[in-house]
Amino acid sequence: MPNLMTETEGKIATWLDNKRINYNFQSSLIGGRSELAGMIIPFIVPDFNLALRIRNADLYDGVNQTAVARMERAQLHNLGFVVVDAHEEDITRNVDEVMNRAIEGREMSDLDSDLWFPFMGMFKGISTFAGITGLVGGYGDPEPYDIVAATVQTDAATGIAGSSATLNGTLTYDGGGDCSVRFQFGTSTSYGTDTAWQTAKLTNATFSTTFSGLTVGTTYHYRAQARNKYSTVNGSDASFVAGTAGTTFYVDFYPDAHPEVSSVDGMIIGWYLAPDYSWAAVHDGINPSASDPFGDYDENYMAEIQLYGYKNPTLGFVWIDIRRSIVCFDTSSIGSGASIVSATLTLYCGNGDITSQWKCDNNSLLPSTNIYSVNPASATTLIGADFNTFGTTPYCDTPITYANWGSNVGDSMPFVLNSTGLAAISKTGLTKIGVRNANYDAADVEPDTSGVRSGTYLHEWTRFCFAEGAAYYNEPQYRPKLTIIYTV
Image 1 (cartoon, rainbow, N blue to C red):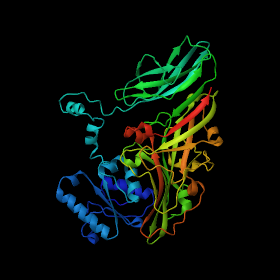
Image 2: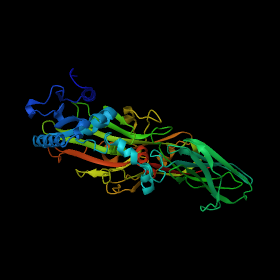
Image 3: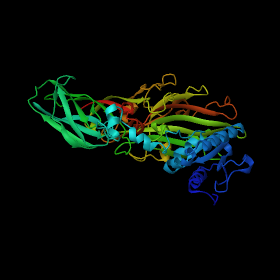
Image 4: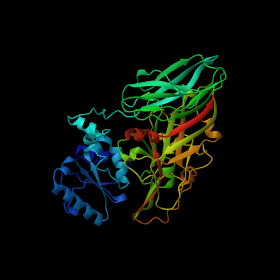
């Protein structure tokens, strides 16, 4: 690593060194590059024709500086470079995310950058005239911007004997503040009886209510509810027959949004390791890394099932990475005595700020997607080594084809679990599911790259929402969902 460099340049150089990526460096402390008309470009990465510039808040202080930056970008493009501007604030915040994008020729948008976060935070969640006037000293009482919708789980009823039963629930996420919880109860899904609110509940709090005077042999329905300052939400419907121990449950499970308490979802990337750019290198996890996102950037709003490479004019086609995803669910509330009837994993396209980017097939490979076994080392944190724990036996008999993968906000992609998948559901712990490309990655069949033109990328992906991103954009309906039907 060069000795003369700024702290920010040092972070980037360390990242490139760790990835064994060749680069040409000239510190901004020395000035501009004479061979490039005095342009200040600290890093040139020749394998990807990448010119990486480092920007800071001063870039926005004047029109002249912005214009110069744009003119230099145009000149570099004319010279054949892919130009990426990386902001100091973003590098300090998450150098791995910035550099993963840079290698792909992409950069953080203005709204992704921390330069804009203070302004975005001021107005998040304030949408009414009363709210805005309240913020500036007029009328209204806006809610705190950091309160979002809670989530609640309807658990199995217990103590079903004679004319009584106990209803149970779990507040799986409080949305950022105190919640109240209760049950709706009755002989149909219209319920008709609301129990009293139980107040001051926080994430992972359990709650119960006992009913007596029930009619033996009658089917009763119930669901948990939770409310905070943002909204009131419902758990799934469940039912039981009074006086019997046999109960059928239809329960939805979700991964935790950050910070994870009992279940994680995230993305695992198998990188090349220079000078080995082969399919085997990326497929077999020679240089893996983990991305357990916080939902701060649009990239982290979504999971990518990706095949990615580049036709280098000198080296020929080089594989850059394969991306797989992991979704985990705390299903311990089912209990060892239950019998699982069926289960469906549903993934969603959301909104956020990445509309219309949910799939890509720029080389007509028609990538399909399926679910498989995986065994991450931790229930709450992902590591690169998890890449090599993916299995190849599918948990679903029907992969979702590229044509059937969603492309619009709210589109859903359901995977019905087969007998192997049902057997993998943990009744007393963590259910772990891997999502990967089916027809190339899981099959270990290298795609035909002969049609990729020199200097262009191969991009094949399908995407879905993570729990973190869905929480960040207040779209809990687009979290990964595992629906399990079981009897007790």
